[in-house]
Image (cartoon, rainbow, N blue to C red; front, side, top):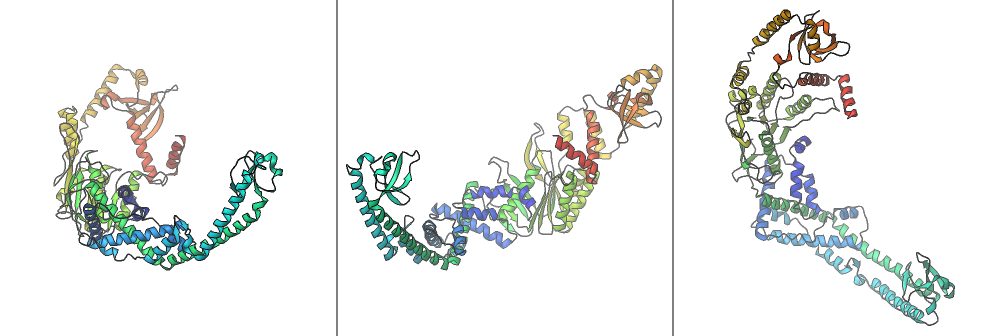
Length: 634
């Protein structure tokens, strides 16, 4: 499945919800890399694992993950023949002990979780390594009893430190040196025992200056009477570190010998962490393990989008039994797109082994691929219009789809001339039907709805809305197409019945009435002749007036009114030309062409936008430069 599907359906966001229930980075790492399986058997096993984990949690309320750490970095270090320090070795010991506890716990859960308990049999136990580590290291420090030599060295160190302490205590309590001392305590600088002396008396003490305080008022002197003992002590410290290194190297070697088995343990524990996170997530959302099949049948009963709030309206949806293609109509913001996404994300969730928020008789099909074309994929950088980018995506879908594919289209065919868009959409849906794919599409086009009504393997559906309040109900009705919500809403908003009747006629037969234009034109020409107001016409030409060019008899719409040179700008045949007012004649005033309050600027803005879109589609460099210039000036 491709990244566009995961991104559009917010698959990563769903995995983030599940990651919240992991107890370590092990499960989180697996979830980051998790993708839906394309296999029916794989999906069935994943769902069974989640169900077993949920049963265990319900029965015990605790899984012994204590001491489990992500030791993957430590394993990498050992594999590279690196030396572990004492804290790293202790983490390995804790991990091995945690594996041993989980193994015992899971084997005891065989009755509730036969699949998960079977995994525990592959967990290895390393009591000998645990014991060696626990004997050799305590409190993250190599224990003196780890070797006879280390024990001997540390006894010498302790004895020598006692001697030094005794000598220096006599020194600082001596009346002879009392006035030279800054403080009456023994300090340690650069691994040597020293005494703090006032800087002005440093020459009064027979010894070596080892360090000086920040302000320079105190010097730390190693009296000569302990210099030999300090040197001997440092020599013993070196021997101690060498012995500790050898002990840590020995323990690292023990771990290295079993590193492959330990790595397998790490993988199994990671799986357990992820699976139990799925179980906890299922409990949180009151999820169910749905029935599954491999032949494209989907039957969602009161299913919810897992990323929406709990009070979202449940979806009842079915496809793949009596029909393999569904066309959904309905008003904007009525829930068509979220219905598409709900079907898509629930499918991805099930194939990932996640339980879903739905009723228990819900059934989901396993697909090898889920393709989506939802949202605005416009890319100025690649000079693709919205329509072009949709077609590019749909082209890739058609080339890759097969009988085991689920395909989701939102507003298929939009972004171009409606008649062409509807025809193209029908042809696309037909081609996908022929290869056996399951497709779900939303649309506003009546032609697509009519095609679905007459096709034996297609079905219509619509999203309900409240006819009184005009609010969407987010309920899908499968089996019939929706009525004209636009006319219903227009009636509720006060549009006259005569206008709605004419609109319904235009929708059904496309026979538009131009008689009023001709009558008005004749009447206006008669008025102009009778009043002989040619001079005043020049003054009255306004944006939106329809004019006739005297020389060519072409007609156009005034785009810009008269300037100081008596020139106006007119849109003629989708182009803009500048003419002197004496070269045009008023044909129809704007009041007779457009209803009151009409946005006249839209006459030209929409044209310019359409022209720009066409230029972009054919790769016009001039259009691209214009876009980049506009972006730069923002």
